[in-house]
Structures are given as C-alpha cells and as structure tokens.
Image (cartoon, rainbow, N blue to C red):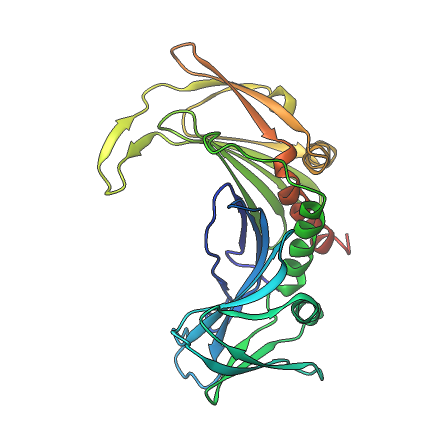
Length: 310
C-alpha cells in the first residue's frame, strides 16, 4: 500500500476535512486528523465516488466525515452535493451490517454505536457503499490500515483530556505519513517568517528538519518583507547542536535518539530550542507539549502499523 500525499494534521483552529487521493486518482484514501475548534475533535474522512462514473478522477462524489468529540461522541457526516431530504442506504461491503437513514440538512448519517461499528468495518479493510437516489457511491478501504489506528490513537489520547492552546500562541501541529516513515511537524509564529520543526521516524533511523520562511507576503500575493541574514539555533535538546538557519537545515538522528524524542512527545513533554535573530532577540520554542499528545499518539499508531514487521 502506498500512502502518497497522505497528510494528517492537528491544528489550533476548526477546519473542514477532505479526503486524500489514491495513487491511481480514482478513489480517495482514508485519512485521520485532530482539530482544535470550540472543542477538540478527532476525525476520519474519505471520498465516496459514484460507482458508475467513467472518468478518472471524477468530481461526482461525496465526502464521508467521521467526527468524534468528548461531549457528542462519534457521528458520521456527509458533505458534497446538495442532498436535501433523502433516504440513504449505508453498507459495509461484504458484511451483513446495513443502515437505512432518512437524511436531512443536518448531514449526520450515523452516530454512536452504529458509527463505531462502521469504523470497525473500515479498519478491517471493508469498503463502504452509500446508495442515494438509485446512485451508488463507493468509499474504498484504501489508507484505512493506517488511518483507522491513527484515528483510534487520537480518540484514546483526547478522551483523557486535551490541554488548551491559547488563540495567539502561533502553533500548528501536523502529522505526516509516507511509505516508510511517520512524522510530526510543528510550526511557530513569532514574526512574519514562521519556523517549522519536523521529526521523521523510520525503521532504522530518524531525521529532524528546521525550516524558516524567507519571504512574507499578503493574502493576495503581494511581497512585504524578505529576511536577509540567518538566525542562530541551539537545538542540542534535539541532538542537533548549534547551527545557522537561513531557510532549511536538517540532520540525521539515530533510531535511539528519534525514539527518545517521540517518547517525550507521547508523554506530553516538550524539548526546548532557542532561536536567536541577527538583532540578538532570542525566541524559546517548545517542541511538543501537553496539547500535542493526541498528535503524538497518532504518530505512535502510525509507527506501530508501519513497523509491525520490523
């Protein structure tokens, strides 16, 4: 299974989720994420395409979007075409579990134990078929092998409570997955040039990358500022020593070093990095932290799937 472009994210704001695209472009890929909004949520989503569509990729599709929160539990929502009040038939292909739902503008298709059972089927490798006005929409099981455990990891961590993130603290956390590695990326905003810290963990070693934007601009593409001189970074806590950072810097980690950082993330601990601007102004960056535990749990679930035969 290839997870091309499968990126799972945890961000300090509410964003609607959309399914990823499979390698051949015809079907979607299941992806998981955690989100900060009015309440922290964990989600699992994918495209369901019209099974009769002849073009590839097709725009004739709907999005299936499972959302879990501590206050509401799990619901399955549907986004896409204007559905109105219709009756929908839901089935886990190859099983005896089916549901007939009178669907309305609330866009909630299943909830509670029914939604949980469907997630179990998806995790077991079964496709989902939605029948709507005699049209059948298929959500392939592709990506579920890794996305469902990551979703489960997010829920397990979030159910124990999620530390709040202040509105202006300028952090975004992303989960990253490729064919051989699992990753955790955190962005910091303290001026016009955000700084990204990324941990990748593979079977035999790890990698850490620092990235600093050099040009800032407006939402309409207008150029505002350009950085001219590098910053000085002390990343000893991440086994990176000290270095000058203009745009990007990366270094290899031993597997023991990568696992030590990942273990701290999972425990809700942070590792401190100091970035000093040419002006002498120093910024203390906390990589990880209590609010990052759900994302760290998702990375741990990703590693368990990727490296189960290692």
